[in-house]
Amino acid sequence: MEKFQETLKPHGFLRIHKSYIVNVRHVLLLRTRYGDTDEYEIELRGSMKSLPVGRSYRASLREALQPQ
Picture 1 (cartoon, rainbow, N blue to C red):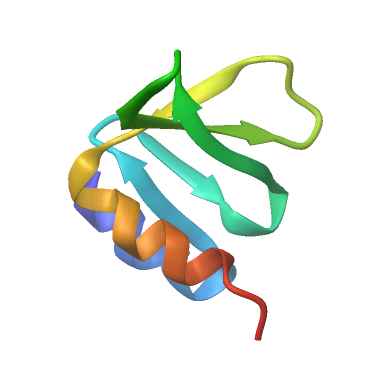
Picture 2: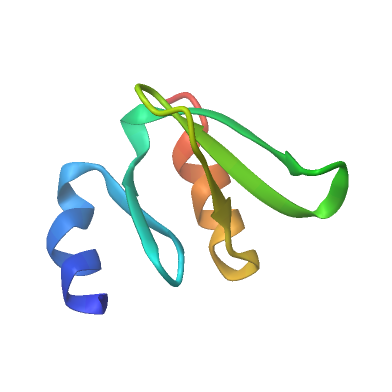
């Protein structure tokens, strides 16, 4: 998974969980999960399923989602 992460990073992909790498340009929303302020999830464009965001990946995702 780490090799995929490094290969895809220059193309706008970011690891958000131990099991997920996503294209940041397709992230619509970052929100708390089930009203729990400690767990987060994202919603992706074109998907009806939300994905969990791991605690250790949260800061890098927030940074990547900031307008430039």
